[in-house]
Image: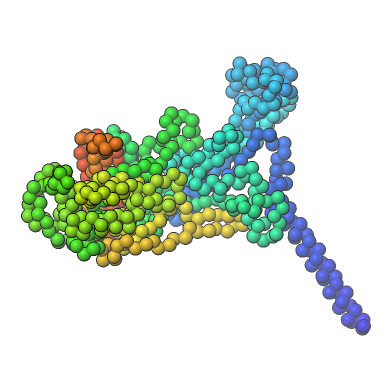
Length: 574
């Protein structure tokens, strides 16, 4: 071997040693900072650890229209004070020192501090680091200061039903999501849950899985389709309705009719997830938009009219005779809302303009009971929408199975069938988006560690109406707004709006018929009508002082319409 080749071998050997050492050092750094980083952070904070279980929770974000993320639910860190009565020798002396730093009631403190059979009594929560340090500096034996985390909702009541909140499980020790998205995405948001935290980066780029449950789902922050300014505006209008009409429950949904993305949804009354203990009635935590069903009424008429158009049995110019203002089926009298007939040759456009029940029965009869049932089922009104919220129930279309004609007749104008608000909103989207069902959703994306983001996949849903049917029913609903809704006074000259109101009698339940003085008002519309960016659905239970939805809900709807068109800078379409 020559001296030159020997020299080259030495250089390559030294080079390999350097590379090997560098790889080892980088590997050790990776293990320290990434794989075992959490372990060392825990050791660094050991002085603040307690036997009390702690939780870690990922963040929920609202998404502003420009894509910026706004914290909707996050974790705050502070300190709590824990007594160990077994170690406290002089409880009055301990009280005398502590009372000047934190508010304490003397008798309650002494009762806790003298429970000699107890090793843990919490006397204060959510203290600042400055306060914690003052208590630590007292060096009172048996008094410990420990770090704690708690869930915090910066926007307070905004979107409370969507977000939900944290609560203890039956064991009284484990915190988990109890309502809303906190519950639905609990496995994604909960970092600890009593198990080693799974590190996405380590999982993806190393084979280190020691002491990790392989069945545990990957954790991450989540971003929502909810736009906070839009949510705030919706809640403002819901509050207005509730106050002005001294009503029962009020609710609303703003959805993209093409993708199913929810911009805003909410109901009144709301609650503050930061302080749920003040709510006396736990039913306020339930979300009626997905958990309750209602006989919605006349907003169902465009769905049935579209079905009649789709079958080729009627169109906007098809006419019927309405001499009496009522029809008798199976010995049951079905009347128009005012009991008055409209005369001969009334076109289908007027059936929607004037919301004529007799006209909708005519549509049902023209296409047949079987087709009515087929289309209402195709709209999936008797199914859940699979929205990412807990507790969703399906609508009830059982009346369509009746052998009597009267049940199909009442269903044609939205009575006798009970539907969820989210189910109705989803079906109505098909009228304006070209005839397909969307999947309503609130999750926009999941953000995993190491900067990896997974977007919510948008898939085209099943077709329920022909494209030309969607265009025809949209033209009819634009005419309703331009000429009939409050006599055409709310028409917008630069924007086309497709809309319809609904006023339904409220059932007494148990087959006892309907109340004579209680109604549910509803309203939906989408815009710009021929290329809709938004669909708004509103409803109010038992409003006082006004008989019809056109008087209670038109103004809030138009306020939301003008706000959305301006806020999103939607160009005029006419």
